[in-house]
Structures are given as C-alpha cells and as structure tokens.
Image 1 (tube, rainbow, N blue to C red):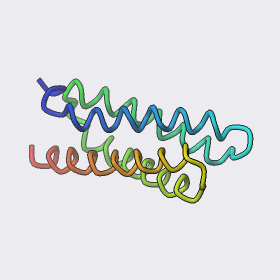
Image 2 (tube, helix red, strand yellow):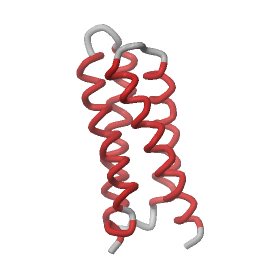
Image 3 (tube, rainbow, N blue to C red):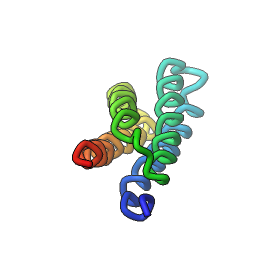
Image 4 (cartoon, one colour):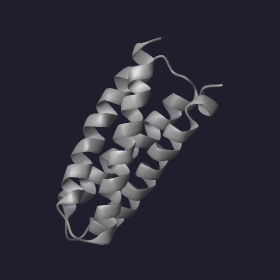
Length: 109
C-alpha cells in the first residue's frame, strides 16, 4: 500500500499545502507575489500527495516540479518577518526534504 509506505512524507507535504494556504490568505492583500507563490505551492503539494497515495508511476516527474516550487516558496517566505511566512518557509523546506527522499526512491524502481 503506497500511502502507508510514504505516510510520513505525505504528512509533510500535506502540512506544507495547509501552511501555504494559510500564508496565501494572510499575504493576499499586501504581498500578492508571496500569496500567488504560496497558492502555486499548495496546489502542487495537494497534487503530489494524491500521486503518492496511489503509488503513481509519475511520482519522480511530479516530485521534481514540486521540489522547484516548494524551494521557491520557501525562499520567498523566508524573506518576510511575519510568523505565518516563517512557518510556511519551514514547512516548504520540510516538504522539499520529503520529496527528495521520495524522488530518489522512485528513481530506483
């Protein structure tokens, strides 16, 4: 069962999606670039969590895109001092770590 094997990674990625949604809501009025990037990241994390849950053969390809987006979101959010951006940046970094592990396992299949 793929979702059980990948559960800790899925949890990190879903947490990232949730934190990005929250950050986007907080930033929408005064930091629209941050909000847009957070929304992109959240959407991609929700998507990859589904791919991982069902053990998709495309995990490696989707993971690479998600890693790039999460890394960009972490970099953007880390530049802002408010707590929600800092929390979002940290969850994005954790998601990148989880995705890199999953991606390296997928390559070995």
